[in-house]
Length: 476
Ligand code: HEC
Ligand code: HEC
Image (cartoon, rainbow, N blue to C red):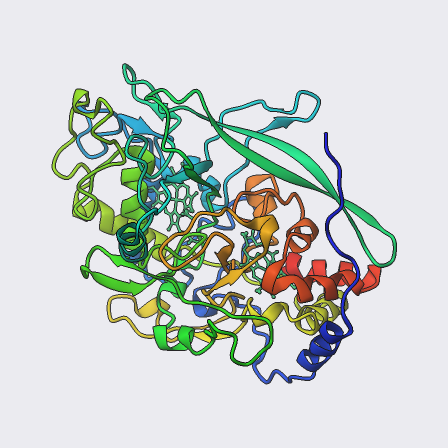
């Protein structure tokens, strides 16, 4: 097993200076523990991510419940006695949304045995997005406007499961090496470096130079609030060419909106490649479960695969009414209230978070816009800790796979609300886009590229201060 330390622990005087300048900014906004405004719920047990917005009327809670049932329940193959949930497959990752978004929290990475350097169970909530490289100018334009170019045989995603009688596409193989990071005070931490391979491809060799991007299912709370932050407010933080010279760019992704048939701001997914929850959900039905919708009349099954063998569950297989109920559900999952927000440790940690410049990307305060059909989510003062923009996070986190305007090193700033509750809900910790970080500390240590100065600032704190910063994250 390779063990090498590449993370530099020396940092330039200029980065210190910058960090000091950041810390002088004053913050007038109050620290309301209701991270999701009036929608927030006071719950931090195993069901903390499954509650409807606190201000949702009993009547509207019924819609939430219907959406929940389609999110939770397994879909089945057609023909079936239930026509409401049939049409599954043939190529799938699993048969229910909830199997990946565990209890509405994030997914798990597959179990791994270090002695054998091998996975010991099937990957479910971590899958590989696939695409072929853009070789010509026309390819590049197509990619930038309509998104990644699917592999001609395997499509846009590896489906490692299938309905009976159909061969799954192949398997994801995950192994790890380790990398030691040494703090300025001499303390050492070991990171695990994941390596991905597509093995046993069942339909022939994929394209030469196939791009693969591992993605873990993110947690589901507060998404309807993020959907309502205005584009104008988001763009106010964008600085793609880093004109203010702070080392942090922040780039909006622009993606294809299937409903509007036009380009729109991307908000959802680890690279902000989906413009709305409806389209994200529709893509999940089609890509993860082989179910067609009005927005995705085709699944990820290509003409080189035996898709016609499977019986259709209708046209589309997921009726609009169902897609709308699921979308309502994903819009109204509530964010838990911040815990111990007044404690001395959390308050100190919050100061270190700001001093380290974490909040340059993990932007704290927003006010949602207005949507007449979503009054509960409208005009809410929220603290999601994201700018919804893309940042170059360095070579260590790079997937080298472009997605619309996001390049192979860029990721959308992950929201931090709920980050401290996730382990209670799902019983595991695995942060970042592929779940490689086993602790919040590891997640910070992986920050490179535009976030390197900030990471170095964190590393230069003394041990007590670092613990305080982590306690602040735990409170969210
Ligand atoms: C096989 C696992 C899997 C299944 C099944 C699944 N998801 Fe996901 N989900 C993911 C992954 C992985 C992502 C991140 C995708 C990306 O970055 O491209 C995601 C992202 C999302 C997001 C965006 C969250 C964010 O923070 O941006 C929503 C909403 C979502 N899924 C809803 C659903 C719904 C609804 C279903 C069922 C119809 C579903 N998912 C089924 C794995 C899954
Ligand atoms: C340059 C922008 C930037 C800065 C500065 C930054 N982050 Fe991040 N952060 C990101 C992005 C982008 C991701 C998602 C990266 C990925 O998944 O590969 C992320 C992810 C995280 C995560 C994991 C969240 C999850 O759900 O998996 C944590 C925790 C985190 N950041 C904390 C911090 C802390 C603490 C600091 C300050 C020491 C910081 N970040 C500074 C951009 C930034």
